[in-house]
Every structure is written in structure tokens, then in C-alpha cells.
Length: 224
Image (tube, rainbow, N blue to C red; front, side):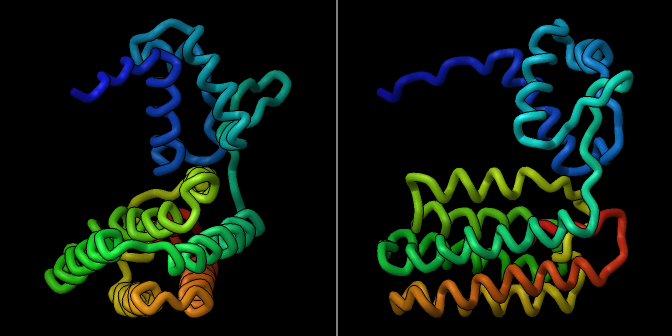
């Protein structure tokens, strides 16, 4: 019988809600976060809100300024380039390591996810692809580096707020290119070719960054 999971603490609840709202840019960069207002909205006391804000500050998603309090960090072009560059390194390394240790079951699971993405893309369900791609990438990193890389990859992705409407997966041409890259990564993993898996992953992430830098929108980030 599985051990029951402990209930989420109030501070953890506030953190998870604010993290999701910041990461999805429902709370955009530059927004002031007042502990009292957040506490009232989420139905908790101020204490867990302050704990959550300290954690978000540690994540570098908010900053404190004199006479202004907590403010959501407003990330610009330099942060965007750093974000994709760091993702390319971490996820590329994860792909290289995954090629040496992936099991048939894990490969089958990735192929199943890719097939689901292909079906959604064929039927124009582009709004589903961003989150599926996130799962695809993080699954590979988890396989390659379960001790450290998976947590690092999530930390990097959580550090850049992205509204759903800014996802590059909403662009039909990008969908085709991104899906082809995923196919190449799967082939390299199946062949146990770590160098190829890393090269394709790095190029894949960098191309996503280049597209986002060149494309105006509600935010210069993407969910690829």
C-alpha cells in the first residue's frame, strides 16, 4: 500500500499558485505583489505568503525594492538569450547522457508522447503542443540525469515567465520544424548515439530561441 503524501502546506500552496501565475505571465513582469492582497485572494494569512515570496525571490522571479516591496522581475532580450543558451546546455547534456542509459520502456514512452503530439498537430490542436513538448524534453533530461539535471532543467524553465499565447508551437511552420527535431532526437536515442542526440537537442533549443528573438509578441519567450 503506497504511503500517503503529506498535505501541501499553506506556504507551498501559495508558492505553487504564484509560480504558475508568474511562469505563465498571468502576473506579468513589473507587477507589484503585496502580501496582504495575495493573502486575501488566496484565503490564507500573510505569514505563508511572505514565506512563498522569499522562495520566489530565491528563484529570482521577484525582487524587493525600497518603498515598493516585492515586484515580479521583468525579463528582457538579454535574459531571453541566456535562458535559451542555458537550456541548450542542460537539455543537450541530458540528451547525451540519456542515449547511454535509456531503456526500451522509456524509449517507447517518449515515442508514444511524440505520436500524440503528431496527432494533435495534424488536427490543428496546437495549443496542446507546448506542454507536451515540455514533458518530452524534461523526460529526456530525467532519463539522462536523474540525480541533478532534471531538477536543474525545471529550475531553468521555471525562471522565465511565458504566456500561453506566446508559445512558438502556435506557429504552423515552427510545429513542423520542432517535430522533425524531436524525431531526430528519438532516432539518436534509439541508436545510442549520444553525440548526435546532444547536437540535435542543442540546435533544436537554439533555433527556438532565435525564432523567439525575431518574433514580436506579448512576450519574447516560448514553451518549446
